[in-house]
Length: 399
Image (cartoon, rainbow, N blue to C red; front, side, top):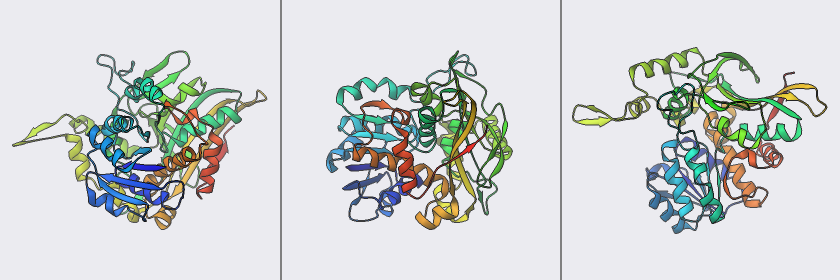
C-alpha cells in the first residue's frame, strides 16, 4: 500500500505519527500547501514530504501518479473534499476522508427541509467509483467514523430492533492561558454548529431543525461528567440510516454554554459567513478572519488538560426482546496522547481511525467499491484493531 495524506495540519501530522509505528504500507507521502509543515511530519525513510494544492484536481492526481499512490487520505478541511476526492479517482486510487462534501441549506425552508445534504455530491458520484472498481470510504474519522462503527456493531451484535442511534460527543478539555480556544478547526466547527442540523426518522426521512436546539444534559464517562449537548449538523445522521435500520438518528455535541454563546454571537455579527467582504482595498472571508485570530488547535496540546469522549447511544430491544440502551464510547486523555504521540487528544482521536481503516484495507479484511460509509463494513475487526493500537473502546449499559 502506498498512501498519500493531503494536509499536514494537526490531524495529518497525527496520522503520520500513528502510521509510523505500523508496517502495512511501503510509502507514505504527506503533502501540504506549506511544504515545511509536511517536512516536519516525516517520520522515517518510508515517508516523503510534498507540496500540493488541495483545491486543484490535477495537482492531486499528478502527485498520486508520481508516487504510485494506491490510497489517498484527505486530512484538509471540508472545502477541499471534492477536488481531493476527484483527484484520487482520476489517478485510479482509493480514497478516505474524515468529513464529507459540504451541505447547502434549503433556499426557502432551511429549518424544516434539507437542501443539499452533507455527502450528497460524493454519493452522486458513486456509479463512477463503482465502474472504476475503486473505493471511496467517506466519514472515516472519529465522528463520523468510529461512531458509525459503533452503530454497525450494535446492530449486528446487541439489538434485535433499534429505536434510536444518538451520537453524543463531549469532553472536559481546558486550554491554559486562553479564554476561548477551540480544540478542533474553528472553520469546521462553525460550519457544523451553525448550519441547520439534520435528523433522521423512519417515518419522515431526513429533515432539519434549528441549530443548537433541544439541549440535554448528558453524563459522559471517564470523569468528564454532565455536559450540555445540542443538535448540530453532522455526517452520521446522513450515513447511519443508509446501512443501519433505526427509528431515529441524531447528533448532539457537548459544546457547553459559553461556546454556544460565542457561536451565536459570531452568527449575529455575520462573522460565520464564508462569502468574501471588502475591507479597504482587499476582500476577506469573515470566517477565515475568525480562524486566523484564534490559535491553531494543533499547537495547543502542551497547554491542554482533560479528556475527550466520542460515542454512540443505541436504544431499542436486545436479541431476547427486552428494552436496552447502551453507550459505546472511546476516551482519550490529552496527557496520554501528548506523551505517547505528541498530539493533542482531539486531533489524535480523529487521526487514529483512518489509519486503522487503511490497515484493514491493506490486509483485505475490509473490501468494497463505490462510495461507502464505515457502516458498510464488519465492525469487529476495526474495534479489535483499536484495542491493538493501545486505545480500547468501552461500553456503558444505560438501561
